[in-house]
Length: 630
Image 1: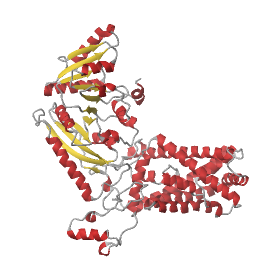
Image 2: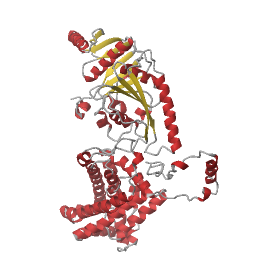
Image 3: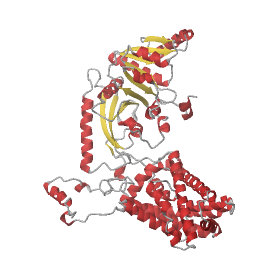
Image 4: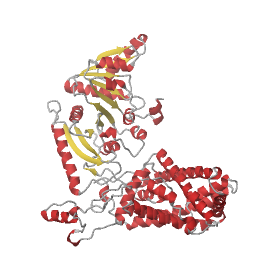
């Protein structure tokens, strides 16, 4: 979002949101501005120099807030969407319960019976649940921006609608068979459930169109509001208009219809086709055409210019947008100082994402050593700064500049600390960049793709890239599509003099062998290869395998160790006691996904005293094979 016309905070539930300050007013730069700033903070609250303090967001700013929230929602996992939708559907039951109860007790008074109708919707919107009609605005806006594909939009709608109907059906069953209604309320609920089916199809459609306009309009106005109280008032007044105007809402209608179907007073097909379907279509078209598209085109063409990466086209192509399964390319990171890198087959690129430049210098040095084995190589050090929970602006221009300047200073110190006696500076160049984002883990993958990295080296310690692993995609999907080779370094000192490489074959062991050979060539490391067999009878076969594997990987000079105990972790622990670094390839379940979900149960990694380097290479294994090893 641009600094000049977007809110500092886009967190939908924060009542303290403030409009951003234009760049020329972001922070006092002179004595005059300091005085002005002091006046603006005076106890009387009077603005300086006769200016007027804006108390509402512009249309562009509202649109940006909606886009930021949609980016969070449309990229949620199926389970989260479904259960959030189910909770919303069950909350609608509260609306049906109260509406029928008041309708029965007031003899159908057009106003008194509707006074508590909005309560379920207040729970939903203030509670952040997923309601289908509310989703005719944010995800559609994201799709119009070509940052989410049409199939992704339909997937989002389908899951939310199924969740809404599931929750509504459960609530209807409780109302029908739980003895919740009084006799008067039961009669009113029966009337409400059959009244819609008796209404003409096109009348239902157009009534629902107006209801869809109201709901989508509520979403727009809600994002323009600054306080929770204002949101509650907006939601209450808007949804009160639905029963008073004799309009129809699809989830409410489905719940009312299900109630009478469960009691045997209406056929399911009749209820769905003659009642729910026209309401569904009307709500959808009303929400999309009358609000989303109109509000979309009233905003400026520059509404998202600064929210995208400089020089990087974030929008989907027409083909991706129409047929792709991609789910929202988000507007984060808020800051990215790197340029897009063109593919270069002649240059080996090593990307090193770090969370703390002060403590991860050895990781950069190890990456430089591996890169120096190539005729032309670039080590790109990326400082990933983690921001809180939801995406929010990184502050004023001066605050952003301060973040970038401090990060660049730290990165310069890190690159300058590399031992030039080991690393050939004639073949290795350095690049640095800073990313400020709330999705630290996925930024590693996105940046590796943009930079066309050949290798990513990460630290595995107490840094936030693992601890705060947030991603747009499910982690299992993300880590099963590695963009390049990955090495994860458990730093217990950068001593590469004696390296142990356990192997049973496979692409990840191949990567470990390449690393071991590079360290052997660069620093004269002594490499030992370890192979574990189940029984002493298999020892001879294990020795043959290990000798052949060493020869195939140009490690014939390595010490060969065959352990016939059958206990992999104990065998590795015994051999590692005499070594300074342990190289381990990924398991069939995948390395990164298990690291991120804290399911990497390799005690040997924590038991050994030496540094550990975990390796994983992209493979064509299906997700089923990666999960179950078959």
